[in-house]
Image (cartoon, rainbow, N blue to C red):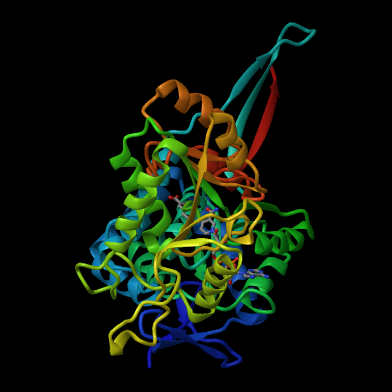
Length: 486
Ligand SMILES: NC(=O)c1ccc[n+]([C@@H]2O[C@H](COP(=O)([O-])OP(=O)(O)OC[C@H]3O[C@@H](n4cnc5c(N)ncnc54)[C@H](O)[C@@H]3O)[C@@H](O)[C@H]2O)c1
Ligand SMILES: O=C/C=C/C=C(\O)C(=O)O
């Protein structure tokens, strides 16, 4: 059985405690590996290695030197594309057709984009008048924040982890990564790529384990970490924020959502159906930006529901290697229990189940997987938990609306504010509505169209801070003002 070890100070090491946990395939329920669980000793070793690398070669490199190495990391991922694809799909069960287009290429791009960006950042300067007439010159310099704790989720493991590690390293920081316990493989494989690319030991460290009372908590409680960047559930974000408060460490939090799609009667129906299908069901609904609430203008409500149902029913459920498959399993049986509890709740609350609502029949060799049906409901009250709470599964509730104001009010009615998608061919309306949606990201006639230079993050309980492009610099660097009296 394959053992998955930590990557600390440039070497793969096991846990001193000898504690291991199972890595289980979501597609068939079989154990695919045994993962070392970090104790305080391993987390401490990783933080110490990061601190030493910061004071050592990495901290002393020029931006251009670091950028060259990070380009080699990106090329290293691309050169081992098939291996990354294999293990990402082993961990998550997602179709290779999806991960080969999104997860792995984005993993590589996250290093290139931020390496290039750092080479072109301008710093602010202010000339200042002084009473003696000689003046003063203020100029800003950016310095790495230090040792960054990176805590990432399981839904897009390589993409979301490198989305943080790419800019962190480009800015000259060193990182200790705690990947999700569900998906340890790509973060570990990246250690090999880092070694081969010439990233100095200690710059990139990975510790495996769980959240509370395990590697996650040990990392967030460690006093020598300067800042934490986290993607995951809102409740976990609160816990991490509390831990980071000790020592006044900064946090960047990308949290949960209950995103609304708003479909106007003047939309291009083909586009709206295609985009809503993806936003509700891609990655088996396990995308933070996904749509779980769809509001459709009444004149096209019935037609929209019928077409979305047909689209959901045409999804091809299957294992990662099935070239036809575009719909995989949920991440675990535990998560399936949660999703199925909402499927039951919807029925109890009087929903009309338009399609799905249960567990699909799978061939014998996949029967142990965490499969679930894509599901659509109508007819629920606005305060049903199914409509107000993040399910993080392949499901959505569709509700009619009669006016623009009503649609905006419904979209803004929850404490989350991550993303929204608006479907209309009327550009004025698109601008007007997009400006009023309380969310960090609004798409018009699209979904998950990503330019890595743009600000990414959530408002309200969906997060704190923005990452992406130059916005990442705000978190990953300290901006220092130097004032020179002339
Ligand atoms: N806003 C975004 O950009 C974004 C992106 C992807 C996922 N998400 C959210 O992530 C959630 C799904 O991911 P998940 O189930 O892995 O989230 P999660 O919060 O359960 O876990 C995320 C990570 O935090 C760790 N963790 C858990 N408890 C911890 C603790 N007490 N201290 C330190 N670390 C701890 C986990 O081990 C894991 O590595 C959903 O809520 C989804 O909306 C948000
Ligand atoms: O599940 C959440 C998806 C987040 C996507 C990104 O962070 C990104 O595209 O950079």
